Length: 366
Image (cartoon, rainbow, N blue to C red; front, top):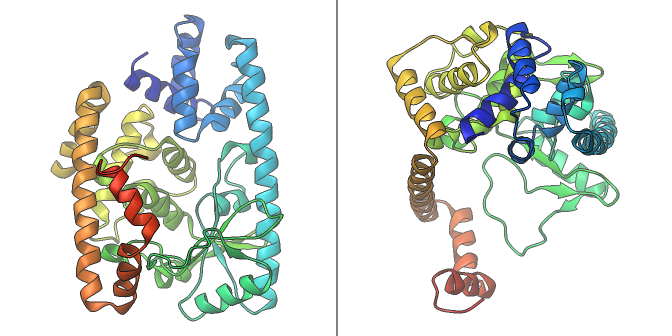
């Protein structure tokens, strides 16, 4: 199985309990015994959907088609993830109660928000990193103080931190299962005026005692996390974990019109929606409005799936462009922003950073 076939097989497996045509296609493939399970495990793990893949195959009664040792391994990993996610839910509940007791209402985001609202039939499906929540600019510094007073400390205890626009440096607490990100923004500065706390606060919903975003905003953020914050729009690739969230959320709201109110964000978000539509075998819930920009995007996306050399070449080009752009932005901001200027000064005089750069440039051995 090449990269494209492996990616599409996993993607369709994530939909087999909702889309009958995909269930038939996958079962026919499984019956031929032509599935390269090593490739499936590697790619689904890289895309953080390994437990979701197992849960969907199990619900569809397809596990009999898999090697017994693989089923045992998948079951083990899924059980571990379920246990971790239950710990995250418990930690989120503790944080929620703590902040409400201080007259502050958190809005939980991304994977944690999805778990708390019950988006997944089995909480083991979603692989979650940090607990993310967002607050108004007025409450943001208060939350930092409250968590620090309750045993949360910075994950990276360095003498200086890069100025963060979106969130405070990650915090952790001894005995707690997940690190915490306290957000005041959802997006990089370029798009922050278009999608921010003020927008999402207008239609937050309360589910199971927690505040989460509206389904439309959840759908948008599921794409934004990959497409904008992780530069997926430049790389023109797809993250199956985000695509699976988008698919599940499209069962609760109309994806076709979810982004109509956006301006600069509208095209990048619809491009991701279109790539999901293609990869998940064209489910109606992910239908998109075709434009010239979207079709050009899809053309490159498809070409990269079919050509590993082209994919690697375009990835390096995008990476180089983004690196130069980010460094230029830091230099520009350091001229006008005291916080950036202070960080840059400490960075270039940091002996460890200097040694690291000498090794990278080949002037010194590691």
